[in-house]
Length: 199
Image 1 (cartoon, rainbow, N blue to C red):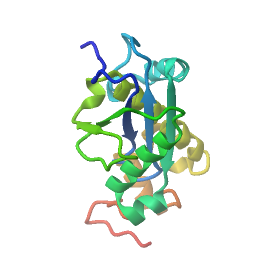
Image 2: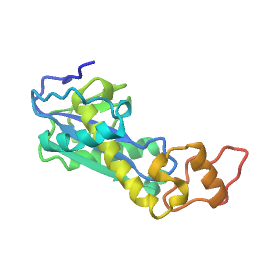
Image 3: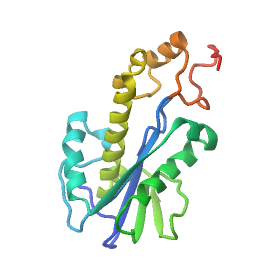
Image 4: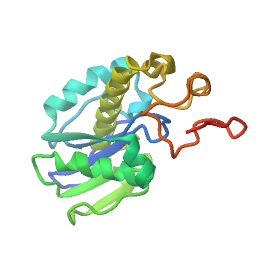
């Protein structure tokens, strides 16, 4: 399916997050304003793309956007305000970095809070429909993955380089064996109910 722009606004900002369902690490959001007429046949929802294709798209998006921003919200804040609020906060922080004020914001998902009185629309599966959200999804995913690969060096036993903090069987087994780190989200169910974890 060929992705397109959503509105007729010149400065339409797409925003999306990555890492919402992870047990460790930040939730990361990106905001992107693409130029009118931007086209890229490869661009799609980041979850539909291989790591190689995302790596290929990242510099294209960064170079060809009018402006973009990427922001992390870390574990302590996720635990304090919950993952939904942290995801929206990350999107707001990403938009704070834009060098042009959006005229309209399109958001992947169904929840958002107003940003600077700019009109917005939430779109379920928007990252597979609209160019600017797809571009934001690629940046959010690649920046978050890079961060997780960095902290993997500190705690290699959790294999974040591979699982990126998602609740894989191996990740949960490592939590069970080694306990938790400062990067784990304490408000999340880190292990199945039958296994208890001491904080």
